[in-house]
Length: 245
Image (cartoon, rainbow, N blue to C red; front, side):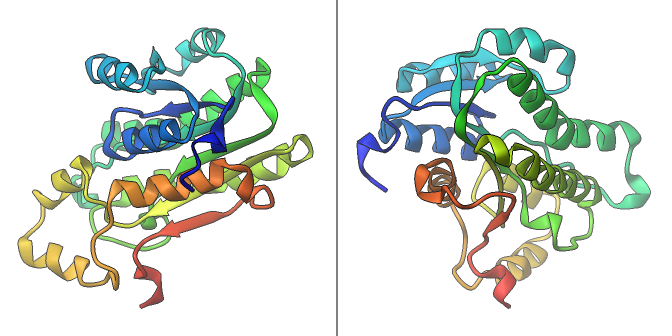
């Protein structure tokens, strides 16, 4: 979709707008005419991106859900929401720390659900509307060292299915995207903790090779748009054919 008018007069919230995926989604939506509200806890990066895209910005810390109600007061009524914030701690089970597990589940699964709750309660989501949650391939595929991350993304997908059913009478759709390995800062941090041989073996599982943030952004744009009006409660893989092998 390249028509700038696709999202004309549409207001979309992008949470995690300073990450590789979130910022690319924001730029793609902006190019197609969306009016954006960008949210992140990295205020300095957020200001730069918001200025570049002529977007509203709001500071949010997903570890502090008690602050969400006040934040929601500052947000105008939305046509769409994209939750792209996340953390991916890498640790074998025997070295896993409770605080890291709890933090991962809080940021990746609990806080998106609570933020959507507060937006919905304060009638900040239009009807119809679309919500897109960024999950991960790891939610459905085992990988050593990613128990915390997989648990959080599995919970996110489960809650998305329930929200999809609950919100359907109000024409609010809820879907997840499940990217595989995407060239990003998060992926680079993970690659620094494993050997080159293991990393290469993993990349060989992708028939189409490496993925990029734009691949996820294009899929998110489709799910936010009216072109996906009859799609809800699903997880769309963006994995270069990983599941096909």
